[in-house]
Length: 162
Image (cartoon, rainbow, N blue to C red; front, top):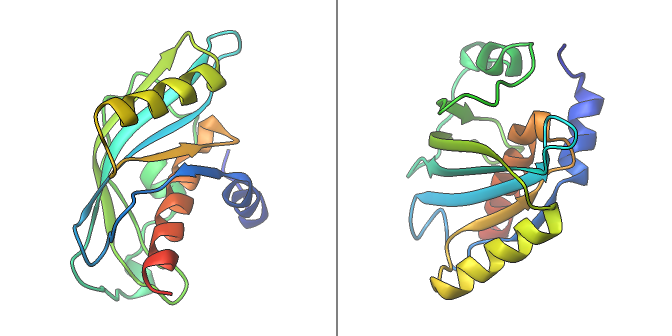
């Protein structure tokens, strides 16, 4: 089952970016580590945690629309399989910011903690490791966490180029 544009926009708007990297992204470096948390895909299974790294192109790329894969081309129309170890995908076409991004490392897991406990643990880990580069994202729809990651990228790009 694929989402219509309105449903995707709703997930995009309801995504909460809890933490962004604290220094220049696109101009400074081209790797964005993130942790995306949300409800478990299966009820009663705790929370879902996705860890990954986004690689941002060092320069703007403009590609013909015909070369852009659709959401279903990349992720399929069936439910996201929690056993997936990794996928490669790209984001293109941010309004007025044609930047190419790809995610080459992906670790999706279910954890027994509640979302609040998971967020608190991530923030503690960032502080202990003195990590200023990793973003933290709260997705309203774990099944479509990719939309929340796109929201994270869009916010960083907008902040960088204001």
